[in-house]
Image 1 (cartoon, rainbow, N blue to C red):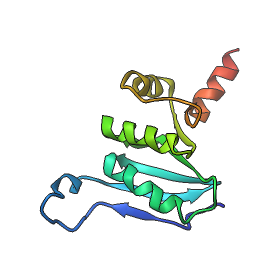
Image 2: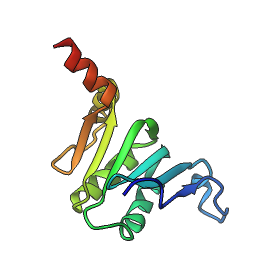
Image 3: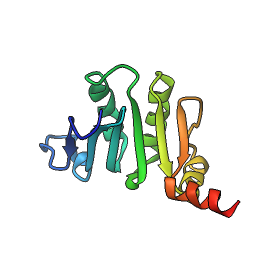
Length: 130
């Protein structure tokens, strides 16, 4: 599956009592190459939205977060990504080595279904230097 058959965003939520924390949330979801890709500012609210979109995509669709186009905004978001992976969803976070090391230091629960992947440019540099 390529392109963007699903696009969702959060940025101008309806303001109701208790939702003030959502005012700064901005993220974009789209399906590409068998993954639900997430871009923008990813907070715990954004992560709680992912299962609803995964339910309408083909089985075994994973989640891909490319840190060149996304930022994980909180420890709560990291914990929720871990729970999503524990529920059987493959979650891949792609980025440069320093960014991935930072996530591990912040307590990202890396496991079999929560994968840290070096960015393609970084992987190419490692291959060239060998």
